[in-house]
Image 1 (cartoon, rainbow, N blue to C red):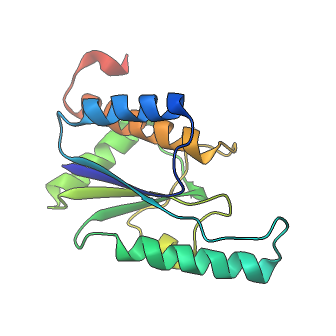
Image 2 (cartoon, rainbow, N blue to C red):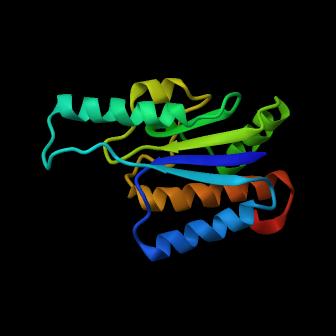
Length: 159
């Protein structure tokens, strides 16, 4: 299975880049990995609801344009379902067995994801009810995808 992470914003800290690169390298044993970084829509320092909505719509259009046809799409959002590592492994295995060759995970910007992106997903996922910086969320997501693949292969990383 191939993996794609579509995210709003870039990694700016070298330690997040290094951690991300490490998990991308490890995931290479299971398929191709692509990370697509899209620019955040500009917002004023204290945006109002209308400005936030417009920014989310703009970012959403960019995201939707990058989702490959036939992919299993997993928007990451606070109201998403929280899965254990084993459940994520089973979900990805089921998607692969259903003929979906690519799993796409979407990480929004600081204001979240537009509803059109959330509706495009197979399953909305949440890492936690806690809030994490999006840069850290990317590393955490890559690690969990790697863990899920190791579980599916019956390899000892998980324990």
